[in-house]
Image (tube, rainbow, N blue to C red; front, side, top):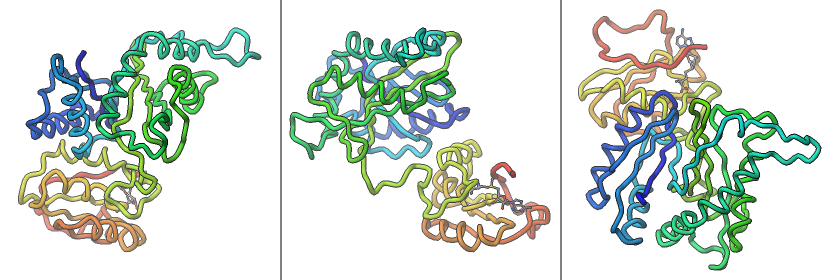
Amino acid sequence: MPVSICFIVPSGLEDIAREEIAEKLVQYPRLPPASKWITFPGLVQCSFQTSGLDINTKTDLCTQVREIQFFSVEKMFLVVASLDVSKDEFQAKPADSTSGKIPWIEWLASCITNCALESWIGAARILNAAGFCPGESSPEEILFRATFLRGDFKHPIANSQTMAGALGASILSVSSNAKVKLENFEIEVLGCLIPGGSFAQLLLGFSLESYSAKAKPISWRHRVISGRTSLRPTIAYCIARMANIQPGQVVLDPCCGVGTIPIEASLTCQPLAHFICGDIELDSIHNKANINITAAAPYSASVVAWNAKALPIRDQLVDIVITGRLH
Ligand SMILES: C[S@@+](CC[C@H](N)C(=O)[O-])C[C@H]1O[C@@H](n2cnc3c(N)ncnc32)[C@H](O)[C@@H]1O
């Protein structure tokens, strides 16, 4: 059975994200080569052929992958099971609405209990050996949180929290030493629904990120100040990768807000491009973009207050324009 890792990436930018992931994986010579790639909306799955490899090698694989900084990735997880779900079945309401039992959730519980149990144990062993359960609790106890990513799927009565609850309950039913903890947990169990035609795919797995109470959400990456219209850093990074910035080029974001695009774009071409960015709002410039860009240094950037309709820039100075949507 190959080891598969899923990367949650910005929807519509999967190919760009996959390019970054593949590029970084090959820089780690101790990793087995990726044997298969599958791209779904908002998700890239990479499988490594590990038949004949021992648990230490699989553990090593997870340890190494989690150390790599993938700028286009929101979250990554070790896949434990991949199951087909009929959309009708998923969206079915309970026949008896007073019982509150959702048929699909019962089905999820039985899947975890029956078909995926061996895989859960195998994956848990890999992660345990990789030190993912640092053992704040007693060795007999694994503190976990369940998260459910349902993408565009809407359930008539169950929201993501209900589904995460059902996933957690299913885990509790198969593991006597698992205990739910929403903060300071050791391991995050993930359910992820991937849209298809009449069927969706449900991926179940363990997150490859460690929980840290101090860690800022990824939406804050490389910034100390965020704003109401701030772009997600992963999207800004992917867009900048598409632009293929070359050393020596001058890159412009005429409506930079808190400066996400120049900050993330500089990661694609460090340190040799120059960024010019500006915004009409003085607060954005003086209190946000300037502060973020200074904190994210070192690289070459100029931040200016201006009206993008009349840029104080001579013709042919700029090589590339990357900017966010105006509201
Ligand atoms: C969607 S937000 C940009 C978000 C930005 N990418 C970020 O991550 O913070 C659009 C920005 O355009 C700025 N803006 C709107 N009209 C403008 C104009 N005529 N000239 C310059 N900036 C303008 C707004 O002040 C706002 O900060």
